[in-house]
Image (cartoon, rainbow, N blue to C red; front, side, top):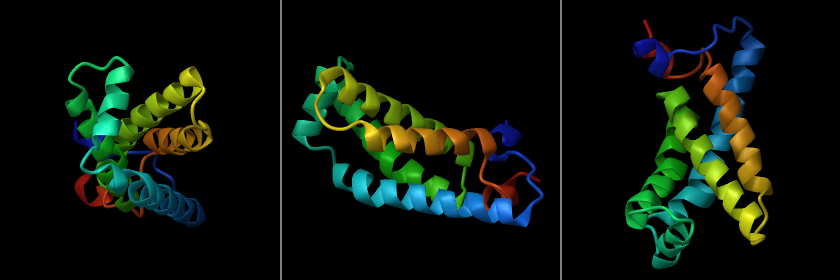
Length: 137
């Protein structure tokens, strides 16, 4: 379980680990502060949008989405529980992209871009410059 939460690919290249750090910091901080923070606490409009998608207990799912976009993105940025946090963000972004595509409202481009980035980070892990490395030993 520890390896699943805090593990990742063992990348030996310093440049590759620095690249992962830049990607984590950029994607994590941008999503957290440009999208996630504005959803906390979830507005009635956001909760209604979640309900329209067919989720039961829309308030709970709206909170989950908002916390995923904010808190899990921050966790990815610092490299804490990177893989599981990136999973939650990826799921949230897949849901957002689906909503944009299925309703024809809004542009799915940013949701799909974040989905691709966070999905890759989920597979790779946080790299050697992540806080996860302190807990994986």
